[in-house]
Amino acid sequence: MMVLKVKNPGLFTTVQDMGRYGHQAEGFSPAGAMDWRAMMLANRLLGNDEGAAVLEMTLQGASFEVTEDVTVATAGAKMPVAVPGREMGTGTVIPLMKGEQISFGGAESGARTYLAVTGGFKVPGVFGSASTHTRSGIGGFYGRMLKTGDRLRAGGGTTTPGMKRLRVFDDDDDVIRVIPGQQYDRFKETLDTFYGSGYTLTKDCDRMGFRLDGEVLEAAGGHDVLSEPTQLGSIQIPKNGKPIILLNDRQTAGGYARIATVALCDIPKLVQKRQGDTLRFEEIGVGEAAELYKAEIMKIHSGGYFEIDNDFKPHRRLLAGKIESIMKR
Image (tube, rainbow, N blue to C red; front, side):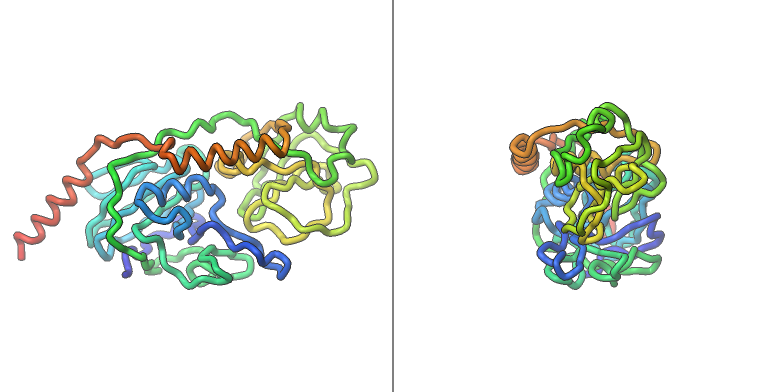
């Protein structure tokens, strides 16, 4: 069923899910939600499959007209949410009536907010995924960002969300944990610089990768290597010595030396950083990185990020609105 009509698409809003895997050898980037934790939590607030397709809104949120009664939930960057007659924050369940409008403002902290809908957004799958990859024009809503007038379909269903909201994420620090990369040994002489210096996000940061500014890193034997498959979080050091962190829409192969790879558990923290924010890298081992990721998944599945939402006003207002609508007939 069609549930939302786009009134204002925001700065960069796309349909994303877990990503498109198993096709890098054919030249297709994985894409997928940048903040995988926020996407999973938004879906779990509604009782959806945690990999159901959501909307990813970047820095400036979108606004929508509600075309059918529906329930939505948000997670991620702190972004004001307004429905006429009520205002709320990110991390809550929001019941909506046909004819209402819902608007998202600019992110007050963080960079990306996720909007989930009951049953997930329904778009044609490409290689098993609903994720948008705008550079190749595949997946999502016609392979592009949302535009004014677009109408979005949802799966719907009988899922009943609980009265939950998200706890505040403890991600304010600037430490990003990494494991040694494929060409780590080439940087032995500059590791103190890499781990001891702060690096700043430049204006050249998007879904493909983050370019950083800071101390120059020299590679023994040169910065070029034979092209190798890329992976999420790889930190390449090109000839100018400034790190580039590869992300969801990255190229499928790269020819620059890689000093490290961001631990998967810290990808959600990383992708919520903005231009001008500073990062400090901290080395951990592969085993520790795996355990930290498992702990994150367990916390998501066990409800560790949720707390009881005692604000019943949005739900009472929806019920009152439905009663009023029936009485007018």
